[in-house]
Amino acid sequence: MRLILDLARGMLSRRRRQTLVSVLGVALGVAFFIAIASLMRGFQTYFVQQVIDVQPHIVIKDETRSPLPQAAELATPDGAVAINGVKPRDRVRGIRAPGDKLAMLEAIPGASAAAILTGAALLRYGSRDVTITVTGIEPAAYARVANLQKDMIHGRLEDLRSAANGLIIGQALATRLGVQMGDSVIAVSPRGVSLQMKIVGIFHTGLVTLDQSAGYALLKVNQTLQDRPNVVNQILLRLADVTQAEPLARQIEARFGDRTESWEEQNANILTVFIIQNAIMYSVTGAILLVAAFGIYNIISTVVFEKTRDIAILKSLGFTEGDIQRLFLVQGMIAGLLGAVLGCVLGQLMIEGLGQVRFGTQTPAGTDRFLMAHDWRIFAVASFFAVASAAFAAVIPARRAARLDPVQVVRGAA
Image 1: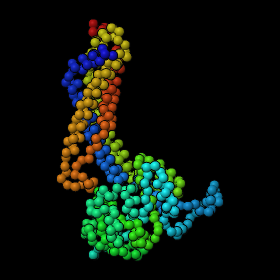
Image 2 (image 1 turned 60 degrees about the horizontal axis):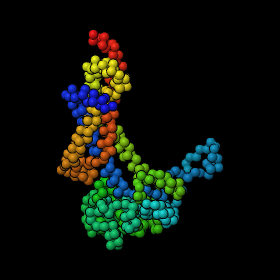
Image 3 (image 1 turned 180 degrees about the vertical axis):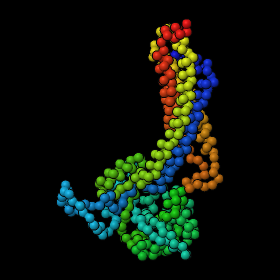
């Protein structure tokens, strides 16, 4: 094998210009792959972290995923029964036995749970009215299931207890209303209950839907506002391992019967967009590597054409077809490996360079720069594709070289 490596290195070094062009082509493909993948992965990771930090991992709601079966369906499960015009039952909404369910959920290793009540309300300040969703929370319990506290720019969650009817709202909502810390607003619920509430906190998450239309109050205060005493309509769950959210949500729904949604289900549309983005990214960067592979194919084919007599001599000395094929495969892999190493260096430089770019303005994502991911797996995948494409490009000329008949070559030369 050492002899094959020496021969491959010698053949490549004699065509330095073509070898350099092929190596640079692979290196640029790897570098662009790394830079684009880091950019995409950085944004996706930042978005998922924002979603996971602001929202709980699992939400249990006071509803069922599908309507309850009717008596006729239960009586004839296998019959041809069609039911139309069934009126929904008028029942009191709310999670039944929330205390027992909270105790069971808290017993799950690595899980924290909190019960809340959400409801719509109309905030009125002066002549301006804005509709928001008010969430009634217990600050200590809610802090264990959501990281809203880190997004507070004024006040704390515990400040909800400092006023009779404290309210925390998003910065964008405060701007729309024109309110500041300490101002009082009128909150009116769909039930007609009206409360005067005091702004005790302002947060900024970077998620427009939350910052413009979310408010937080004490659980008892929101129960009074919504005219639903002692009622909770959601249980929030936060896990130590976010990857277990979806399977655990299915288990909880099967156990309790309440509709249970994981953060992955709630953001399925956005996660699907990420899959499409990744597919586009791999297609574009793969095309660049494919073009670079054609350069390797060209140089190996040229070497095979020019070294036909040398190949005949090697075969006459005892080299087998497998040895000849490995000789030219090694040349392609050497070019691919050199391009991968150089591409990783260039890719890291591109990541560092893009990380220094400033937009000069605050973006909706809450940052003024490119979000780059520093993940060794991106470098590993790019290097693997580079070496694999180089080896694949060398297969055809290597097989052609292995099939050369030394007798025919010598006769042709004579």
